[in-house]
Length: 158
Image (cartoon, rainbow, N blue to C red):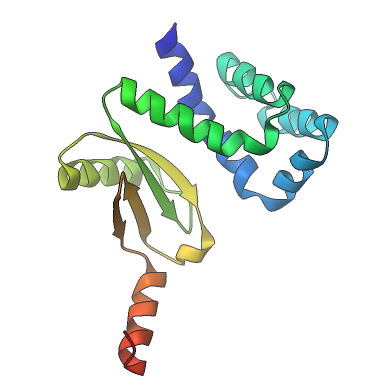
């Protein structure tokens, strides 16, 4: 049963991420329980696994909708730990395809020497490429960091 719950958390991650990344949705959720419930119904609308829907509903019913992102991250971290994987948060300007996610997970596993579970976050500030955090290690292959490095080089500041 525990594996099913953690599997449901894993499938819920895109819904949690959408709630935390979409400022309008996030602000709406912060304002009222009824709003959170209507957003929940609109967001999941029967498309999610029943355990996922139950988990999201539980978080909202507990009055913790505004904390859904950190709660999802902790569940994902625990699920990764139980599956003996390390959680890797990956930020990209656009959603990653399944193939890109798979290749990135393999590359991060190879670089860190441990199996990883990806938590993908869409962050337009990245501009392009990805920024991956695995534990205390950060792998920054973003266009934003390359532009910053170029700017520093051209202005002579370090």
